[in-house]
Amino acid sequence: MARIPVAAPDLAGSEKRYVLEALRSSWISSTGPFVDRFEREFAELCGTRTAVSVANGTAALHVALMALGAGPGDEVITPSLTYIATANAVRYVGAEPVFVDVDPATWGLDPARLEAAVTPRTKGIIAVHLYGHPADMDAINAVAAAHGLWVVEDAAEAHFARYKGRPVGGLGTIGTFSFYGNKVITSGEGGAITLNDPDLERRVRLLRGQGMDPERRYHFPIVGYNYRLTNVACALLCAQLERREEIIARRKRVFDAYRRQLKKIPGIGLQPVAPWAEPAPWLFCITVDEAAYGCSRDDLMAQLAEEEIETRPFFIPLHGLPPYRDASRRRGDRLPVTERLGATGMNLPTYGRMRRQDIKRVTEAVRRRAALAASPGGAR
Ligand SMILES: *Cc1c(COP(=O)(O)O)cnc(C)c1O
Image 1 (tube, protein in one colour):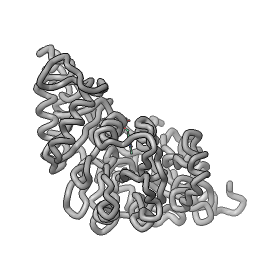
Image 2 (tube, helix red, strand yellow):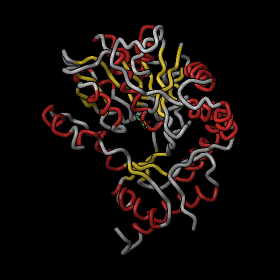
Image 3 (cartoon, helix red, strand yellow):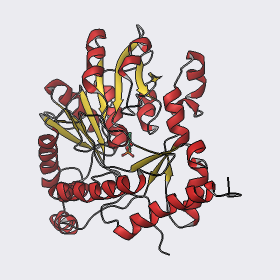
Image 4 (cartoon, protein in one colour):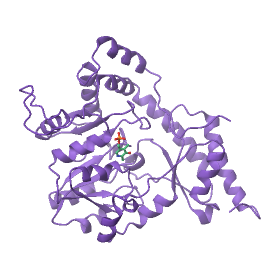
């Protein structure tokens, strides 16, 4: 039986044509019409004054933190249940990530737990819109405002998700996006920074472009970075944006089918959706309650792998990983929701061109494993 991958890009629109157009024009580096067009269109879609393309989502976070002035001795509040880039960017600038537990209703930072993590060193918060679901931004912004903190939205997994009707990326001080190959909109590698403040934009563009003074070529007022994105990558992104509604609608169909077919299986939990949220359909998430389902998340993943169905476990919580565990232990971080989700969550194959029979194959395999565990003498 053909292998079902966990993710696959949908490049069936103008992607090839635009990339060839970029090649033929010989604009293959980081200036060119597709760069300008992508930045203009992406800003508009995020409801921000501007969008700045960057090499990848990690570079977007790094530049955002530098532009906001985060540095040695500072603390930045982040979730522990996220991709490691969120915390690594904090370390790149010499600051320390302080982990706060996530809210079981959103899987994003729990606003009720933020206050207790704020110290005189705290400079800002990175809210992650995990697995496509927006964090509770109004509540997070309220805590930030009370303590004079900035807020970065890590929207790498949540392109065009909406919070109370407003698109993510423009809800905090700065938004960051990734266009890695498995994200909803992709250029293979790529990223963007969205923001409204013109001074911040100047700093972001300076840092991204090797620090070169825009008014004076080869004059460098600061040490910058080469974090630019190419016109070729932006050609891909322009094609993806043209079809964003179709791309999202196709993924939503996969989500709807999964929800329908999985909701009655005991022990299988689905991703919650807050009443104010319109999540982005990134990777479909389930949680496995071992007692109710009959086997563990890891056993289920192994079974699916045997049937040529690729899955991924949720992110291993960062406070347990070597770069962060000692500092987290010293602080005595308590993150029970993060730990439960990290141990029981997994992503099922999710891509727009997934066929109905492939979805069925996945959900039947999940159902069969439960039945097997429940049968007398069944595998545990
Ligand atoms: C993918 C991702 C990133 C990093 O993006 P890259 O483009 O791979 O550097 C950052 N944060 C989160 C939450 C992500 O999922």
